[in-house]
View (cartoon, rainbow, N blue to C red):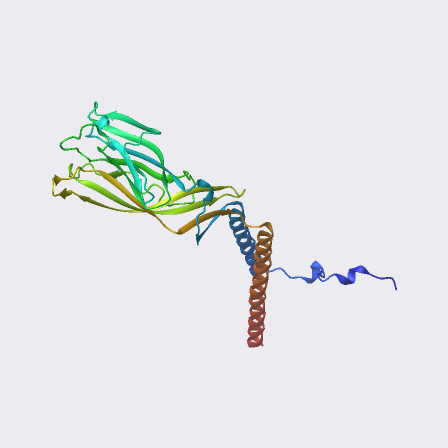
Length: 290
């Protein structure tokens, strides 16, 4: 007897004349196909889309920065002349710079009565502060008005990613125009290193920060202290990392197979139960008629 390879077929076919279609089976089949289509499109959307995974760890992510952090500051002081506005930087490593002018620009506002300061500078990765004040002016004004609007304060690279909603510019839009003109402003910043890694493995380094602020008029034994806008910062040891990931192809195929197989199996069981119950009910009705 010749060897018949068809004996390995575990999907034996039943002749059509031995099958019986039902309205219930048709309804279940249509609902089953629609359900499979819905789940398939949902999984396909998830497979195509990029997933953002975040993690926390203790480390300095940007070791090639030379211990520096780039800062971008954009602030308007509508009641202080540009020749009086200056940026001072100091930290615990001994840095004390008064009147920083590199990569900075002053734009007159209100016909020269006010000033918009835009600056790009770097700070050391140690606690310190930078402040906008009149300390670098040749002659100190009698009553400098430090009311202001902060348009931007950011650290590190600019991340423009739709799926990340972090505090990269937490002070953007801060409005202190109605505050006491003679008051100093303290912004206490806690800077959190942030890494973003795209699908190609390229990393960008930025910094988020939280902020608390207070407003006060300071005095010493010689009288009232000249007001300033202080940004006092400290670095968090915790680094936040965002990683772009896409679902692996094998996982997508496995999920689709599970959806199709599981749906057909459950639908088959449901149809079988309904058909068996229907046949049993028919037999009961026939028995009562006899």
